[in-house]
Each structure stands twice: as C-alpha cells, then as structure tokens.
Image 1: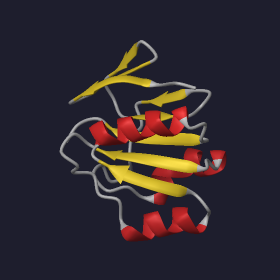
Image 2 (image 1 turned 45 degrees about the vertical axis):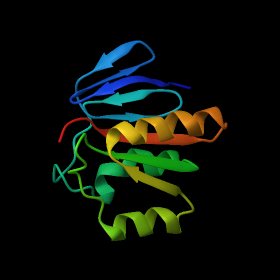
Image 3 (image 1 turned 60 degrees about the horizontal axis):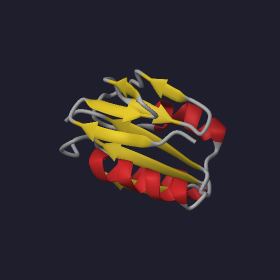
Image 4 (image 1 turned 120 degrees about the vertical axis):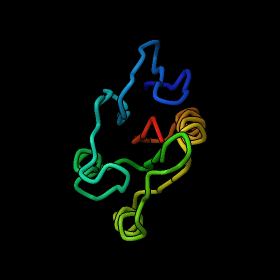
Length: 115
C-alpha cells in the first residue's frame, strides 16, 4: 500500500516519488494529475474512479489552506454508499491516510496539493 512520506504546498512524496499535481492514491496505483471539473469544488464526477473502486474509507485533502470545498451532498452520497469519509486540509489528510493504512483499512485518498 502506498504511503505518504512528505507533503508541502504543491508537492507530495509517495513511496519515494514526488508528485506536483493533485493525486488520488489507491492501494495498487497512484492517479496523478487529478483534475476536478470545477477546480475548488468537488463533485461526484471527480470521484468516478474512486466510486468504481468502492473503498471502505475515502480521505479527502482540501488543500494546504483548505480552499477546496466538499459540498454536503457529495459527502452524504458517499456515506449513503457506505464509504466512511474524512475531510481535512491536505497535511492532516495525509496523516489520517497513513494512520488508516496502519490500521489495515481499505482506504483511498483524493488530495488537492495547493490552495
């Protein structure tokens, strides 16, 4: 399972590799250059790949300063599908992601790296 080793504004290190664009971390792969339809507002279309994977937990990093919004209807939809959702500024989201991995949870992280 990939682990986040470091994060700072605009850059994340996952298993020794640096990424400078938003990412989705799956157990078997990293989707880099993750782009959202509305930039700083998350919508369900942005999470199609995550929904297909159907994780136990989804950790959403809202950016260094937390500027990316996660509308209540997106959160509710995920929870109705039985997905536990954690939303936090990206630094904290990375910590939560690693903690959940250490507990053996089936987790995916969708991380906005700037703003």
